[in-house]
Length: 426
View 1 (cartoon, rainbow, N blue to C red):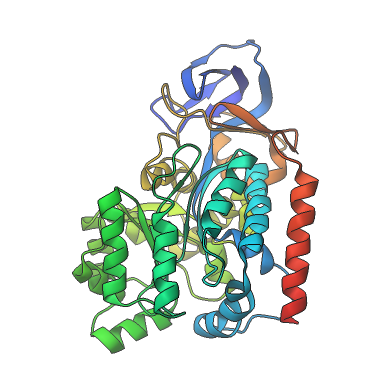
View 2: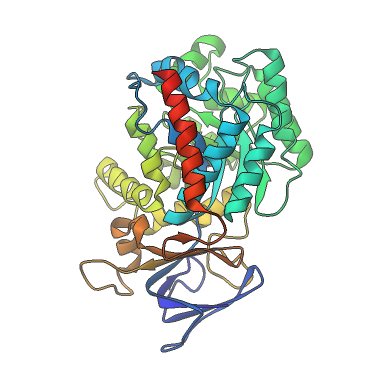
């Protein structure tokens, strides 16, 4: 298959390629060359990007969008009074399956070719994560999936959730598993260590929430006399296979520890702003060469990666006064950096890489040029500009239409699930 366009933003050694011809063989990129006037099997009058990768989502976030019971202000009340009892704690295995399938499709339609999901359904029937993995795979999306293991629901459920994750770690193909736990105020040190030991024994990635709100910092200081990063470092769970999601309230010392341990950070600015937790110190993390990536945290507007990109750029321009966190930096958070964090041979358009691509029609109000293609993409593109999505060498979206599944059927099932959950909460 040959893919052509106006520009390819390769995020690799070739930089920006004008009049690109991308040859795909099986599920890999065979070559990337400039050939003006060449024709392809799929062409776009615009930009070709590497597949975009969200390193942290909650696919069941569909339930939260427009929920009839308004969430309370503040991070801790948000969890205890709303997110846990009205969303997470009521999910069944059927709910997980229906929400994951439709949310995965929404990610694909807007240009995410891969995402890392952390499902939160402690009371769902055993096997719910394998059902989620199967539902996602049917859409054609690439994903890394886990459930958020926690001790807050008791010992038996805590063990069940670890085993749900362990059961995912042998998955291969488009959807595979990782180990995750919630965080230090819902999990003991022994439990976090046990989860990390399982991950290490199986060669798995490990993800947890870190310093999302001030409550997390205050609780860890009160109970352990340390801030969260030193505490986790003492537990021995921070290394190059660890992804710390959120990472909002960090000191310079904590950033230095994350850098020294080669921990990747998943920055989730839109949800952080929604619940008022603050803005992560991204500029300082980049200065210390922390591998910063972007997640969408299950916030539905951030299911559009271009909303996520533009929001991130504008937020950190405001935070720093401009010129510190550039457009190409932000694009790397969803491409090369994200691929590094998830250990994927993706994130750039290069010979031998996985053939995950996004094609964007140019609708910009000024000319698209080699000098502004990245800026136009980060600041001006939106999900509806996506004309084709290719995952693993297969076209999974074309002209806004899903190619492998019945979108209406997935949407109808998810709407039934959401309606039921909203009715029960009201």
